Length: 270
Image 1 (cartoon, rainbow, N blue to C red):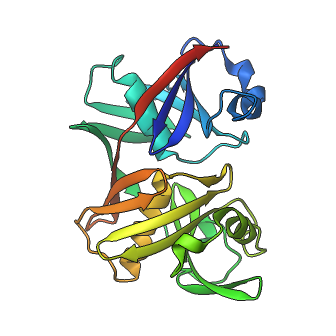
Image 2: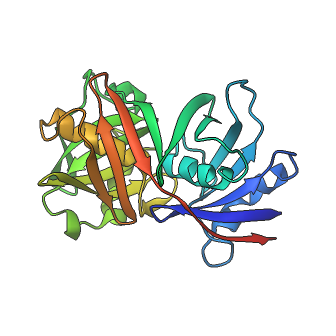
């Protein structure tokens, strides 16, 4: 199997051109391929395939390192676009991922997704609550209360507002929050703090554990800050993550624009 290794904000992916459908038998080996000690090592694998939609140039079949499938993966999309830019000579890509079409445009040295939607309905996460919106609620973990909110941007997220962001054990606390009874299914945990005009986040993903960055988490953190009256619409904000910076804007129509970069690392064959 020929593959390319790409990264966006330090989230790295194995990209496999599967337009001729030669490599589907590798799905059962995803955990082994993503293992950083005994495999290629990555946050996940992207199979590039032919789309069933006439208005999409390709389909992305994306897997996390544990073999699960995300609903949406912004960094994986940016990596795929970086791979495709020398194959498809366009400045705009319509990409199928999980039966939805995501439009990506090339803006100078960045890729941009302009029409992301968010949802505050806790049933989409899901959360075991009767409330219509789950925002700034108190959640007790290890006899300590945390202020949490739920935002779905393709993937379900719980945002935890933190004063001591840089002292939090992301892996330990993220896992404990993830497995609270109120969250019956997989959920991503985002620890967030706004400092001046910027937002800083640390991320625990249900399919990867602690990660360097996550595009949908960056978008969800901006929505969280907006509903806490910390940010304005139609203004671009920098969302700082361990792996890099995402540029995110929330418009008047509740749509999210996110910009990011990706780069080629190496290629190989196994």
